Image 1 (cartoon, rainbow, N blue to C red):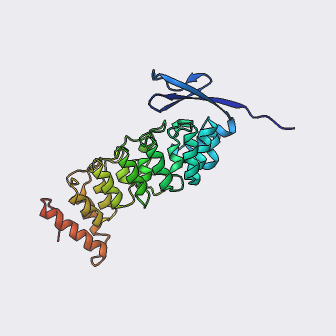
Image 2: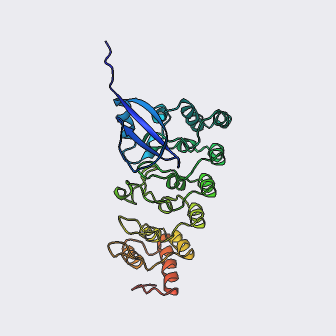
Image 3: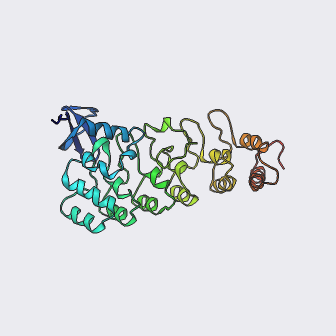
Length: 297
């Protein structure tokens, strides 16, 4: 004898600006006096809701799994579009959009269908979504943007495409950012700041060219990208950032600056190491540009 699971009705309110507010039991979780255009009801079992909540606990990017699609989106057309996008089936994507599938569909927790276009690094599919009007600035309910994730890829083609289609290079932090240490290394657990999460200087340059603030500080540590580079002994990166205009006078919330990191690193770096030579080059640049570091070469 089977025991039936209890169901939860989740109503997704689609707004004129293609954002989404979840409604459970007929009462809005967040009521910000927005004008609803239409409502789509999605019936989920408690097990499905629990699974989605678990996957999105550290940010909505955790929902990016093909097996979650049916539970995320209400309309069958949008489910099919998300699956075709994730599978990299460009022809099917175009066919479904022609039939009425929405490239700006939003579902559970405001998760945008555009995420599934980047699921397996599908460059052609992602570009097609953008060309058909997908909004690269749609945020999940927790404030998560796709831009930091794209910046974290080694291949920067998706990031470049998003920025060319108006993606914000400096999005506001999600609610999870304050809980994330910039020292953590994980493909999906990052600072939430594109410049910090960038996996290459090419990505950094793309973001800066699009208007990102090179001196943006993390709200928890107060560190800038330059401070993080020096702390991690990434001296070539630090020099590149300085050439691009990074401010070497900024200190973090503990009052630690570039000079402090250099001084503390001298004791642990071997005098003939390649890293030490990089640090010497950095010190030389800083002294030439007005910073006095005690005990410099």
